[in-house]
Amino acid sequence: VASVVIVGAGQAGYQVAASLRQEGFQGEVTLIGDEAGLPYQRPPLSKAYMLGKIGVTNLRFRPAEYYAEHRITLVNEAVSAIDRTNRRVSLASGAAIGYDHLVLAVGAHNRVLPVPGADLDGVFGLKTMVDADALIPRLKDVRNVIVIGAGFIGLEFAAVASALGASVHVLELGDRPMARAVSVEMSEAFRAAHESWGVHLDFHQGLTQIEGTDGKVTGVVTTDGRKLPADLVVFGIGVIPNIRLAAEAGLDIDNGIKVDANLLTQDPSISAIGDAAAFPSHLVDRYIRLESVQNAVDQARNVAARIVGKPAPYSALPWFWTDQRDLKLQIVGLHDGADATVVLGSAADKQMSVLCFRRNQLVAVETLNRPGDHMAARRVLARAPLLTPQVASVEGFDFKAWEL
Ligand code: FAD
Image 1 (tube, rainbow, N blue to C red):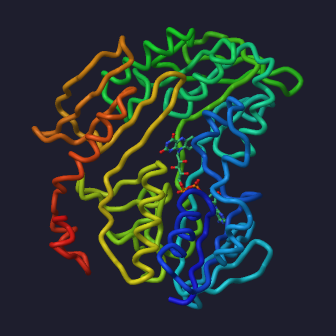
Image 2: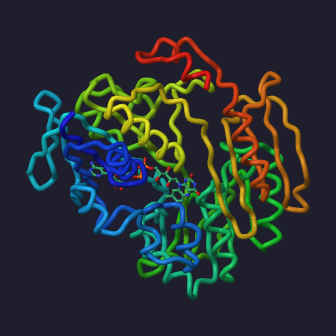
């Protein structure tokens, strides 16, 4: 491989470029992203950056000189098509760039609110630095904030907005916070904490309309017909993987760009990683798509290693974190299908670990302000990987390396 082109200059795309150079790759590396400026990390957008605790320099992975010094060509443009036959991508400007290997690290976009009024001024999603920069000045004199969705992004924003003195009301269709990702016990700890900060959590509740005057948001109408005042509406109702490029190039799609255990699409010259990729998980024996920094970074490292001749099936242990005021939640493993939990510590003390078991096997550990337990859980869960036929039959599978 003499040239690698990476589409998407987010967490995963940046990491492929950086890891290729760390691995000693000597060929051309081109990192193409459709956002302006230098690649940056997203997690602080809804945390320290939103609170004004860190600035843009700290959001960026690296300063401009890094890319020059490491011969990483950064292109701020959208890729509009992939020509698999001639192995090149076309840019929106009309230019084409050839590749020996192509990495799709295109991420995901926010699901939009399917209600009238979603286009009013004062309604925000939170995905990019542009979104955060538009939102931050609004927080200065905001009074009534409506948050749609009690997932990670919605609750992180609720935590920030309430800390800044706003009255915050969260609408959530489900029956508990972060239900997709955490145990009932951990949801309950976060519900109690948010309520203690004055955040109003409204479950089994969506909205039918966002109301406005002169183009500006003034309130929302809930599904049970209440009118709630709002000068700011922030939604976090999930993301949709960016599959268009891959689908138009004829690559397999299944809730994301489908890849094998080596993170390759059905085209051996194209890998897909990060939020956009659906990969076979050895932990749950099905294709999954994860939206986390760990997944983006570890998949990027795996692909870079393969490109320099060190292939290995992807088997990293998933982990995740969220910060909400004085609560740091860390999750390791996948709690899919967990059928029993054991709680250590207590939510009241804001020091708690929830051990999640499936068929008597520890599958995930959620820790609240217990980083020691989190690190221990990472060691314990990494110790005995489940070897499945899918993993063992992958080309390059090495039993001795697996056992270590
Ligand atoms: P991204 O980082 O989204 O990068 C994809 C890039 O590709 C984007 O810049 C996109 O514009 C670009 N792109 C798409 N199509 C094209 C194209 N055709 N041409 C060129 N460029 C293209 N994770 C955690 O683990 N912990 C957290 O606390 C946490 N907090 C978060 C807070 C916020 C506000 C957000 C938005 C995310 C958070 N995440 C967190 C999730 C984490 O940031 C993502 O999982 C991670 O960024 C995924 O990396 P990625 O490279 O796959 O996608």
